Length: 184
Image 1 (cartoon, rainbow, N blue to C red):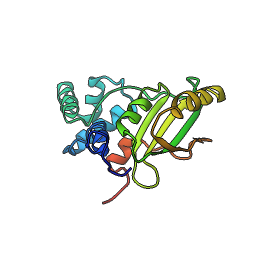
Image 2: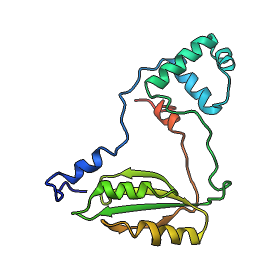
Image 3: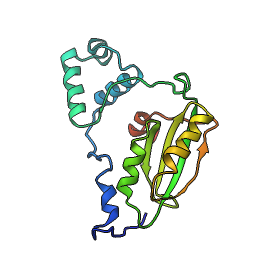
Image 4: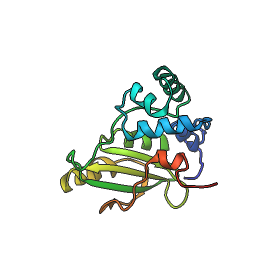
């Protein structure tokens, strides 16, 4: 996406900048923090007492560490990982997109975010400007997604539709972020 001016004389690249998720500075973590994160990642329903027992620290210390990790945005939420296929959405659709030079990227992003099937939207460098991921139930829902929602968004120049045939590798973000098996 190249920077250009919109009708108001403002840069449209700036229009999209405010929509990006916040990047936080890296937090300083010790070995106990890392072990706590890995244990919580394996089972987010574990009690603080159970975590404390495994870590060899008190439950109040676990609570304090969790609160600190939340304040530092290391932990943004606790939850589960659901299987989209078992929930009735077996088709993962990946769509790289290019934006028209005179388009309003913020309007495009807003329109894409309003699509309830959207699971991820990335701003890219390279041949495409954005990449969207959607989960759909079947061919009919994919048809609706394309014809009624995505292709009707003004300012999209080129959209490819790729259907995932299955996952070959899926790494947990926490494993990657904590350098599991990687020496730098």
